[in-house]
Image (cartoon, rainbow, N blue to C red; front, side, top):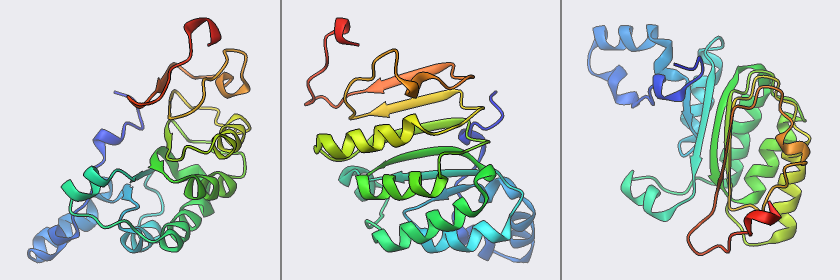
Length: 193
């Protein structure tokens, strides 16, 4: 098992803490329940961040209509998400994983707040939800400048191809690189990669 595998951190349904006094006590003492911050619920994330300051943070945000519908989510407002990201990035060393599949403005906000350094980031999955090549290039350039000394897993989706000589692939501990294309996206020839 990897030390920061988000599968070992539950996504809390706050109702668990409202069943009875015993359940509430157990839930509040079980820090792993509070580490996976679903940014579809940014106000809950804002409550959890200061309450459990020693817990590694796993950020999660998807933009797919089918995902939102299947999980009963509404698309959160951009200012609420930005506020939650700002709170998390106050202590960048807590961020262990990022799984974000969202619009470019939110990705840019996150990358700006990280300010080029994520010392504990172990797993990063970024899917850019825009067809604007210039915006995608800007996000890729920001990612290429990111210093993440313990990053092991990197997944990039809906990006242009990444050349092997790219600084984006120069993380010292990178073990796995996934480049994911949507079914309707043209893939580059292998010789171009």
